[in-house]
Image (cartoon, rainbow, N blue to C red; front, side):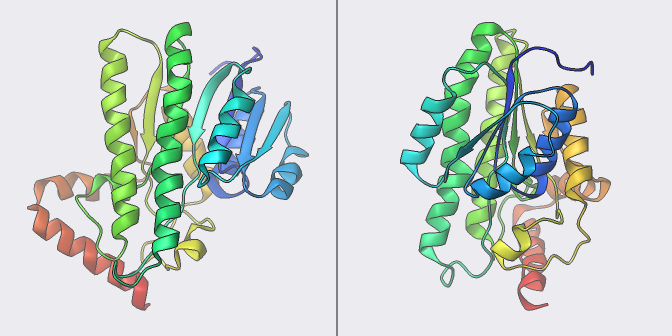
Length: 259
């Protein structure tokens, strides 16, 4: 892709660490001015010092409806060419044991914030007939259910389903706007500590994940899966009866819990 020279922005949520931080670095290198949002303003400021392009920092907790509305108001005047809905987190454990508060906050971030920002920004992109929306989902969103990470799997299934449906609508309308979802397996980020899990599969680096995702986003791939192993698991998972697929997923999740 050619170096970006316009003054249209890339908006990245959850940009203070992990994949979000790497998205910021990559898109800055490509010439995009950035709007970065996360709860940890100090980390965003530290990141901004190392970026090559103009960077606007908006501290926001996307589990808060008030913060989401404030963010929408603050970005309203900017021309956004790229939206990356990256913010999200998980929780691991039997559903009847996990924290209700944490899971409700997870739904606010993983589901409501993605829906909200997509709904706010997509119509403007359709009006100008250009733009990219990348929703960071998970390989969890490609499977029928995930025992011991039930709410997380359900939240990511929402993201993949919503994204695929909108992509079909946009394509059917003959628009050039892109919307897709990133569905990686384990990535070596702070996710593991927040979700209180240890993955049995080796994780990929956030740098590789972001680089692969940006490449496929500009190629307008709707469902982006960075590794062959996860692609194969998703493919064969569709061929299995759902009960078997769910049982196999449960076995993998238990290994995370009791390692």
